[in-house]
Length: 390
Image (tube, rainbow, N blue to C red; front, side):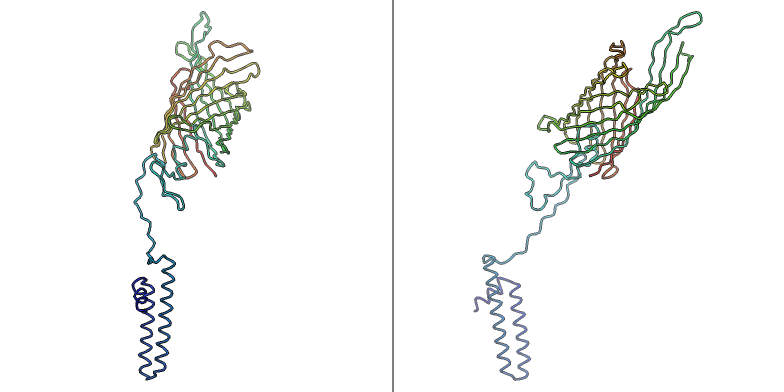
């Protein structure tokens, strides 16, 4: 009995405390009964004390057998580490969730909010990244392009023929809504509904002096675009992500209005491939596309080849900066099946962009372009406000 009592007191402190409390209580009861000189009551209380002690010792033995004979120890508390400072442009890292093995060397646990960084949102706008499955994005946009063209012409004077210039100045505005939704199997459905407005000034310059000046404007509901995109390859070592895209540009818009050509109104089909190579905080993109237009009213726009090379930088998780050069090669326009000489074009634009996250669902994107060739717009400006839903 003595060895068991020693084990109870030194092996399990909670049980020993109960034994002490019970013994102290019985001693107090004994003292109270001694004052009344009742030996019978004292013996009864002592017997009850022994029963309680015996029950406590049995309980201690049961607990020791359940724990392999080792005293219980407090559960270790998880070590708390200070959060590492955030690196601009790098995906956020989070602790390993409960029930999952810790990440090994080189394995990064990516925060789900990393997909909401300005860089990723910008790549979606550029077409180099697709939306996740069942994620919907709607993008109001507006754009402006300024184009000034000088065309040499002959002007009949009262007694002579003079070489003059026909200067055409165009201000082109486009506004509308782009929409995209992520589908299963790394696929995305795309839709664009635009509206177009053009102001055109035509001046005939003889010796640098305007002799004839006309000003017109025209507008029309734009060509609705419907497209589908699919991720064809995933980035692996030196190989980039590759996305294929098919687009149908409908002829829902008017080709001209108020005597002003709007540059729309043809059924066009586009095949494009986009490549993305990530080196955080940088992302390099390349896009190549081919566009074919159907003939309409004996007029057929020339085939187009487009190449765009760019780079985007995650200046911070909320801000992205980008630069790109876009080159377009357009073949001759055909009228009645005959090519119109000199109607081919070589357009090159240097593009600068910036994007900023306004909220969990909203991004503000701005782009500016500078024309590098005579066939290019002088400059372009565009704003868009992608809003994401899921």
